Length: 475
Image (cartoon, rainbow, N blue to C red; front, side):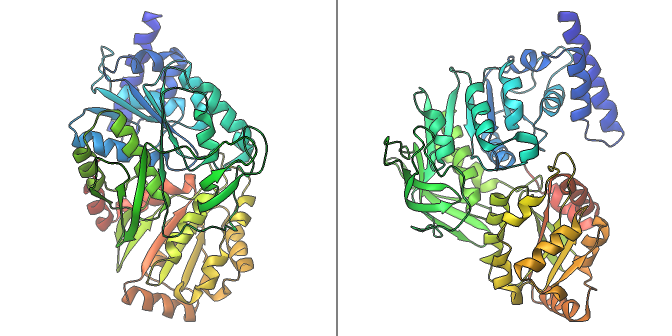
């Protein structure tokens, strides 16, 4: 086994170095080669980090939570290794380990941070017992790949080793139920959000109690199935959070909040948009606290965070500032739309929908997204460019949502679609409105599915102004 391990390590590292010399990322392919030679290589490498491994899983928010926690740990002067760009399957994790390990097989950091795909978790936990596991939320996502949501949750629940400390979302009953009967569980949550309400018409998962099957009752909904819930039959209810946010506000692309405990009156500020991102912040906050990081370093690390990897990432285009953010399932897309709808200025959109294996072949989930919210304020949405392999399907969905046809255009080429944001030249009426939006400093959002995300990001980075933004990333 020792011979196979070192053969895998050296081969993977050499392939990784060669790929980076050729201008490639050098993450997944070297990991693939190394695992072919030594399938247990991840366990051998990951177990050597002196302060252990932290894993982050769940449907939405894994990359943002991982990068937020990395920002906090760097502020606390911890040396970390992590899969920053979201390569969260075994091959990507192996590739990240190869990049952070010497040729002698010794780690070049003290803490290992890994965001992990839900379906990859069983394979990882057969090789590694994480010190801490964070679960963000559970929503329907890529049913043709994961299967029904109950299957995914069962997979995650049964994979987590008993010795691993858990950081769980108290407001999501599907996540919170995983902590029932376990020791070493720490919850995070929100007391209320400015958008919380006693009623909800949103699509929600986990309508019924996971313990007895009775329908859950809510006193407050935050979004989706997240809120303050209780089962009237067996008594299962929202656990008391270890870390709970209160006095939540969102102003000028920044979320601020306080923590509801007796020892902390500090106001925390994070440069992120969207209340759903507050949960990612709290997950990172709770994990950092369990890693014995001081509140001062947590606050500074959150404040220094720069969005990366296409999650509310900012780029400068000719005449406008663009926000690039991944969309991949109905709940996540709905939260992005709610964030856009609350902006005070006009908004132009580029939506790129692909249906490759990593996106999920079935795109019927687009019909569960509330594009009707955009239709209600379409006077402030002068331009929507539909791109990607399924541009026509996206345009059709917008038409049925009530968006006027003169606002919608299709452009399969991602490069040309980005150019159209800088130089609107669609129908005469919409071009005029789009130009007016540019002149007035309107916002631009670029919303791709997974396989369109990095090609679009590369296009944005190649432009001179985008390169400037990339250099500003500090995590």
